Length: 476
Image (tube, rainbow, N blue to C red):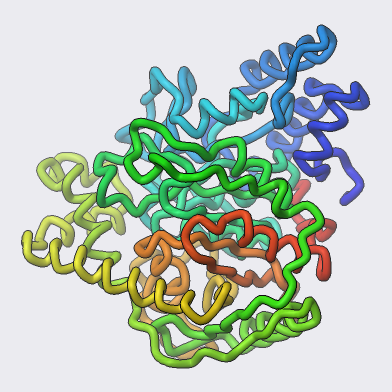
C-alpha cells in the first residue's frame, strides 16, 4: 500500500503533476474514493466537496497543459480543519449551532494554500469548537484511529490527522491552541507542526494581541510540512504577531539537513508525574539517534510547572466570552464537556484572568531560559498511548495503570506549555508500542527557528524513516 499514489508526498505529487506523469484529476478522484471508503469506519470528514475539488483539479490540469506558471502545491489535494474558514464551503465548528455556516471569505492560510495551487477537498472533523483532546461531537459523531479503530486519534484536529495518515491527501491545515495538531499527529504516526506564534498569520482569532491559538500543519513527511509552512507563512495586516516576521525558508533548510554538533535537552516530564513505560522506552531509544547524528543530549530533570492551570483560565474565558451570556439557551445543542468549560469560564474574575496572563509570561520566560544553554529540547508528545474513542473528556485517565486525573494536566502537559510560550514545536513519529501503536517525540526550538527545527526533524527522519508505515485500517 505504501507504493500507492495515495501515499506519495505532496512534493512528489506536485512534481508528477507538473511533469504530466500524473493528473490532478486522477489523484483527486483516488483521494475522494478513499474518503468515501473510510467514512463509515474512520469518519475523518464533516464536509466533502467532491464537485468543487474535481473542478479545481480539472482547472489545475488545464493550467499545466497551457504551460502556465505553477505554484508549489499545484494540483495537490489538501484538507482543512472545520474551524478554519473556507469561502463558499460550510465551516461548522462541529456544532449544531454552526451547521449551516458558510463563510464569505477564506482564512488567510486557506487563501495562501489556494494561491500555491492546492485543491481543497473538504473539511475535517474536530471536537465541537475544538474544545477537547478527543475528536467527537454531537454534529459529526466519533472519529477513530486508523491504527486501532477502538481508539481515538486524539483531538481536536483528529480528522486532519486521520486523513493524512490514511491516504486522504498528503497534507492538512489544522489549528493548535493547546495540543490540537501535535497530539493527533503523535497518535496517528505523522508529523504535526505548531510554528512560532505569528509565523502563519491567524486572522480569525478575536484577540490578536493575547492570542495563543496557532495554525497547525500535518503531513506524513517533514519535507511536506516545510513545503506547507513556506506556502502559508508571511506577515498579514490582520495578525500583529505576524508583522515583520522573517520567512522561514523551511524547505531549503530541510533538504539535505545535517544537524551537526547541537546541544539538546531531554525532558521526560513537564509538570506531570506519570509517563507510560512504553512511551518512555521508545522516546529514550530515539535519543541515541540524535547522539549518532553528532548531537549532545543531556537529561534535564529539574521540575517544570504545569502550564495547564493558566491555560485553562485563558481558554475557558475565551469560550465564556462567546457563549456564557446565552449558555442556557444553547446548552442543549452543545457537547456537555464544552458546556461545563463555558460555565466555569464565566465564573472567573477579571483578576483571575489577568493573573493567568501574568502566568503565561512566567511560562514564556522559563522556556526561553532553556535556550540560553540548549539549541533544542526534546519531550514526549504525550504521556500515554491513545485513549478509547468513546472516552469522555471530563473523565480521569490512567497512566501505567495509575489514576492520573485530569486529561489535559496529565496526558498533554508537554503541549499547552508551548502554545502559551509561542515557541515552535513539532511532533514526529519515533517508534511503536508493543501493541503496534505509534509514539510521538516532540522537538521544541527557539522563536523563529522553525526552519532549523524542521531540519533537525528531517535528519531524524532520514536516520529512522516512518512514512512507509501505513495504518492497518487506512483503507477502511
